[in-house]
Amino acid sequence: MNIQRRAQWIATVMLLLTAMGLVGLLVRVVWIQRHINDETIRKISAQNTATEKIMRDRGDIKLSDGTTAACSVRVYNLYADPAYIVDPDNKLNALHGEDIQKARDLLAAALAPLLKKDPGNVIQELESNVTYPSGRPRRFLWLAREVDADFKAKFDELRADLHKQAAAALKDYRKIKDPHEREQEKEKAGVLAHALDGVNFVESIKRVYPLKSLAGQILGIANNYGGVDGAEIQFNDLLQARAGQISSLKDATRHTLLINQRGYNDGENGCDVWLTMDTVIQSIAEEELANAGEHFKAESGVAVVMDPYSGRILAMATWPPYDPGQYQQTKPELRRNRAFDPYEPGSIFKTVVAAWAIEKGVVTPATVFDCHMGHWTDPTGRAVTDHGGYGAMSVEDILVKSSNIGMAQVGWRMGIPMLYEAVSTFGFGARTGVELPGDEKGIVPALAQWNKGTLTSASFGYAVAATPLQLVRGFCTFANGGYLVTPRAIQAVELSPGNVVPWDREAGPALAKQIISAKTCTTMRNILEGVYERGTAKSARSKLYRLYGKTGTAHLAIQGAGHYAGDQYNGSFLAAGPMTQPRLAVIVTLHKPDRSLGHFGGTVAAPAATQILERALLYLQVPPDQTETGKDLIAGRN
Image (cartoon, rainbow, N blue to C red; front, side, top):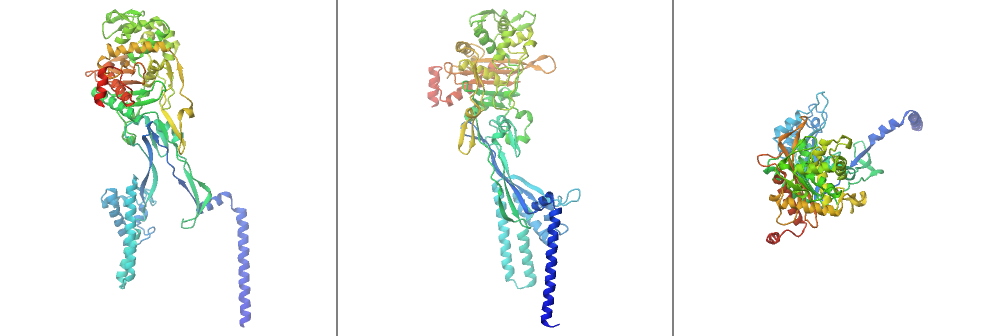
């Protein structure tokens, strides 16, 4: 065959092969069009594309003065691929034979100081997790969770140093002429370069609480999925970040080739939220409550401070304290916000009964009742007693001295419908409307369920249950001219970067309804100042401010027993001031104080309430109005 015919033959064969290939491709295209469905296309696309989340930060919770109480920080989680690192079958690792063991030993020695473990323990942890119980290779194992940026920086520095050593070994390898030494240096470079291949980090976000236990029960806790309790869950829709995503085209080695602009979403950070609590006043309330709780060995305690005009809650303290950062180590009962725990309030409830009776003209402060020297039987035959033996007393003195007998007679003169009206009008038996979870209605029987026994008991704070927040809210009416305000726990919200708006603008102003006259309020303040001057809180009288208040000491009911414990009490005190222009109202309640140390509200709660008011008013730069002595004390402090 001459050269020309041979060339023609080769060309013909090539043409035939090309034609066959084109036909084959055409057949394949037709087959794909007829047999490949959307699901198959999705699977093929998934092999070549990747969608990754872009983390965004949850909003911060700040107190009213701007102090950050809850925020999110970036943390790192170190993980290992045990099957790759140990690789007993020499199938996964980039190295082979003894080099795998050398790299593993080097990895353990490098990580041990960071993990604060012995290298042998690191190796043991890896080797014991090479496979799952089913025998399947284990490709993921946490080595350290939620480590900080400093930990990661040290790890990155370590990896960079090993890579630097590997590069130096490769440089030396090229200079070595002896084949054996040359091979050893090459293996050394490989071990150094691949020692940390089986470990890496996953970035995540951790919620932290810089103020530790301050306002802990208010804040609650959030995890990676959102709020769990407290303000974190109440304002979750505002605080929660919206994660973004980025889609990219990958090659066979999963390297990014192209960013898909249409699949890009930057996401949104959560909104920052400002609470109404003031850092200083919250600290004062928690400190004074803790002092009282520890001194009287109480089981628990609560203190709430409110602005009587705006309804802003300036402090809401629960004792014992709770650090949200120690959520897992804290008993559930310590995480409760006790400002929402209903209890029979006892004598502090007499303010509601007396104010309504005066408002409705049933009695005046000067109306006199016979208190029967401490022992009286109501019209149903029920015995009522006082802690002191009093004879004839005016309504004013009945409040100042806290006579159960006197108040029961006031209640009987009012009658069931009017007393029920007083209780419901002051907001008891209904939620306060505060923007915090756990807002309880308390317990107020329906009017149809009231009887004469309820009439006697409710007159001095039994047979109904109220929360501390409800009680201090009701007490605020005497300070603000008779308005029942809605408590507020949120002050402002950042709707977009730099756009901070008052919460009232978003949610509307706090509701306030006048329930008693300003005249009755003035009367009540004048009466209740006597509690400090000559009544059940004389020992807690302020030397700086003219304050007014009411003590309460309530027996605790034994659940399921149908009677009260003889040695278990709630000691409470409601107070506000200054007298002429009240700025703050406060309640302090100690639950189950040690009776041998004291249990009366005037003993266990009144001093703490007075201290909270004094310190908070000084902080707010309210001038003292008590006496020259008080002014001298301020001058001395300054």
